[in-house]
Image 1 (cartoon, rainbow, N blue to C red):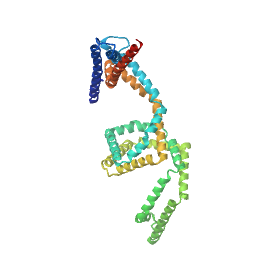
Image 2 (cartoon, rainbow, N blue to C red; image 1 turned 135 degrees about the vertical axis):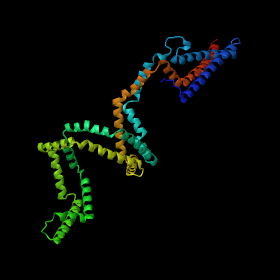
Image 3 (tube, rainbow, N blue to C red; image 1 turned 90 degrees about the horizontal axis):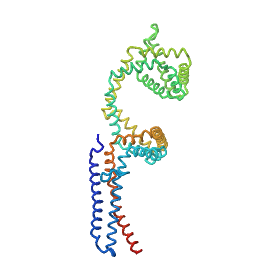
Image 4 (cartoon, rainbow, N blue to C red; image 1 turned 180 degrees about the horizontal axis):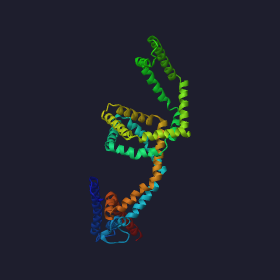
Amino acid sequence: MSLMDASPADDRRRAGLRRMRLVALALLLLAAVVFLATLRLDHEGVWGYVNTGAEAAMVGALADWFAVTALFRHPLGLPVPHTAIIPRRKDEIGRNLQEFVTENFLTEEIARERLVAADVTGRVGRWLGRPGNRRRVLTEAVRVARAGLGRLTDDEVRTMVTDFLVPRLAREPVSPIAGALLEGVVEESTHHGLVDLGLEQLHDWLRENPGTYAEVLTTRAPWWTPPWLDERVISWTYDQVLTWLREIRRDPRHPARLALDDLLRRLAHDLQHDAEVMARAESLKERLLTHPQAAETAVGLWASFRAALETAMDDETSYFHARGDELLEHLGRRLTDDPHWKGVAEARLGEAVSFVVNTYGDELAEVISVTVERWDAREASERIELHVGRDLQFIRINGTVVGALAGLAIHAVAQGLS
C-alpha cells in the first residue's frame, strides 16, 4: 500500500499547501517587480528605500525558499550538499524520533501523571452511570461472547478435554492443591455462606414436605410396631429435625457447625500430609478422568451451558442482562462515589500502565523507527511535507517581510553614515 493513497483530509492538506506556496511566490514576484520598477529611479530619496527593501525582500524570500525546499528535495534538482535532508536521513530521523518519544513520553512518571490528570476511573464511572452506555457494553459483550461461542465446536471441546485437560490433570497431583484450597476456605470461613444456604433450603423443604418425610421413615419402621406408634415417633422426629436445623441456622457457634469445620480442617490437613488419604484422592481422580464417559460428560455440560447462555443473551429481560446492568451500575457508582474503590482502581491502573511502559516502552517506540524504515524515501518526504509544508510556507512569507524590513534598516543606516 502506498503512503500517498489520497484521503479527503490529504486532499484538503494538499490544497492548503498549494495555496500557501502561491502566496509566498506572489510576494517574491511582487518584490522582484518593485525592485525592477525602482531600479533606475533616484535612490537618494524614498525610492532608494523602496528599491533596497525590495532587493532585500527577494534575498530573504529566495534564502528561505531554499531552506524549506532543501528539507524535502534538491532545490531545482541540483544535488547541492546538505539538501534533500528528509529523504537522505529518513532512517536516522526515525531513530531520533523513537529516542525522543521514549525519553519524553514513554516514562513511568509521565504516564502516571497523565493518568491522574485524565481521571480515567471517574470518567468510566460517570460513563457507566448512563443506562444507554451500560446497554452498549452489554451489547458488545454479547456480540463478543456469541462470536466466541460460535467458533468453539463440540469436537474442539472434546479434543481439548481428551488431549489436553485429562492428560495434564492426570500428571498433576490434585490432593495437595485441593487440601490447600480447602484449608484456606475453612480458615477464612468462606464456606459458611454455602452452609447457611444448604441449611435454609433443607429446612424449607422439610417444612413444605412433611408427607414425604413421613413416607420415607414409614418404609424404615419395623413391621411389628403399631401404626399409631410409628406416626407419633415420626411426628416427634420431624419436629426435632426442624428445631435442630433452626438452632444450627441461628447459632454460628453451634456444635454441629464446629464439628463440620473440624471435619473439613482435618480433611484439608490429610489431603496435604496423609499419604493414604492423598493416594485415595489421586485414585479417585484417575478413575474419574479415565472413565469413558468423562469427555462426553464435559461436552454435554458445555452444550448445556452454551445453550443456556445463548438463550439468556437473546432475551434482554433475562437474568443475564438484568444482573449485568446491575453490576455495571454498581461499578459506576463505586468508581465515582467511593474514594476507597476509586483509589484502589487508580492504583491498579497505574501499576498496569507502569508495567507496560517499563516493560514494553522501548518496543512500542520502536514501531516508529521500523515503520519509517519501511517507507519509500520520496513518498515519506512527500507525506511529511503534506502535513507540515503549509506551515513551513510561512517561513518563506516571513523571510520576505523580514528581508524587506532589514533592507530598509540597512539603507537607513547607510544613508545616515553617508
